[in-house]
Image 1 (cartoon, rainbow, N blue to C red):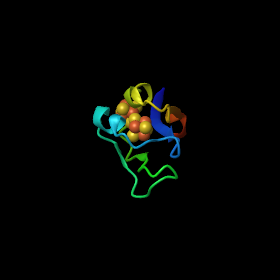
Image 2 (cartoon, rainbow, N blue to C red):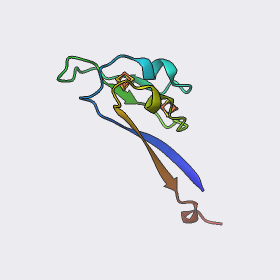
Image 3 (cartoon, rainbow, N blue to C red):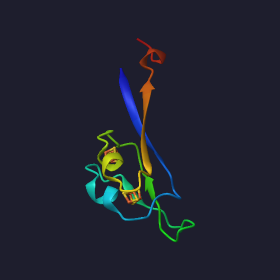
Length: 79
Ligand code: SF4
Ligand code: SF4
């Protein structure tokens, strides 16, 4: 079974502290251009290189990140 990882980020809960950006081993997090209602630039996930290590999930002081694991169904490929 192969997996692909993505994140659910609560953009209004995010305080824009940048801890997750500095900790991510794959450098796949960055700030949004816009400001949320709290006046902060929330974080977004870029690309497809998240390895699901959960560092961002565990270290976010505002519990704004949730990891989502999707199964990649290989049975759709020809054998
Ligand atoms: S789970 Fe790990 S690899 Fe994925 S965005 Fe968070 S810190 Fe980066
Ligand atoms: S650690 Fe949490 S609050 Fe800080 S920038 Fe990342 S998602 Fe936002």
